[in-house]
Length: 190
Length: 184
Image (cartoon, rainbow over all chains, first blue to last red; front, side):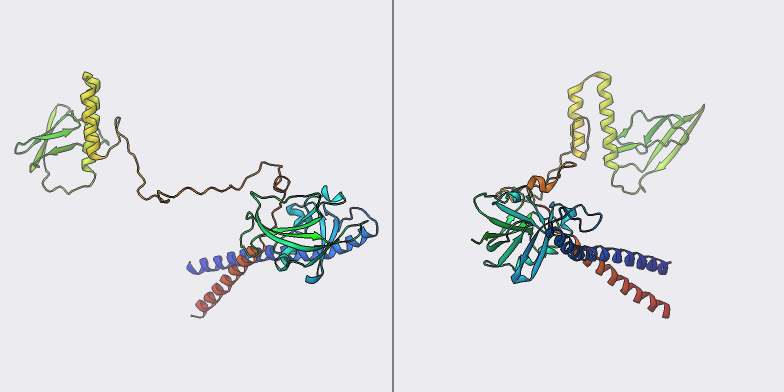
């Protein structure tokens, strides 16, 4: 009887363990594979197509490319910053705003996949933001802030050309969903 | 059995409740609470079953002590007092008597209730309360990022992987234990 209980528990633990591990690994695999497919979709977008779906059932498309040369990061930025999209890549938060000539561009990304490199960004690091039909814009990291998302927003100053990268903070918190945000503010280089 | 009465052996004075003692029916025991300064050695129980009289002597000096007996008596006492009120309408005297009994035995009654006082306050009396914004549960079809501008940007990947690894390690340990038992 006791033996059977141990066997049952063994099976349960194995199943739950595999399932949890698979879930966790799938998040990282998805983030990597999606960026690979997005690079191709971005190439098509640059060639002149609009709203290229990176995979047939995708509900998002690449809108920009973000590069951090000093950290060897090239990320395709997606349209629509919601939880579905963020699994595949960082996304533009204020999509309506970026069509203006100037203003703040806010990009959000997952702290444990695409935007993990934000913790290594230092003041003075270069960032490049590319959009189709525009000259590449170059930014330099100016400030790093940790804000409480419940009480603080990101100020959009139309007079200043800023690139703001946002991710969750702290980076190594086990449980997702905290209120703190890690904000990297980069000023445009003239 | 009807007309049940208790007589204290060896005289003495005792308060017997309920009064009058109700009739005895099959399957329904009659419980009598008795309070006296000195317990008599035995009580004589008298009753009438049909037309035949019935008497039995019950020794009570050998009775064991019980924890809830005083409460039982007090409940009976309060009930009796309240019955008395409806009989002759002397409300104020009954109220006082009921409160006295109820307080002495920590009972909830028509005139008394229990109040719990927290004797271990969590916060020191001279400290202010902390205030901070609560996480908002949004109504259906409203999106966090549309209202607050900052999407949730953390995945449960790390937790999933750690929980998964823990479970799998547990499985390996269990498997080891199991095969060792097989050998033994």
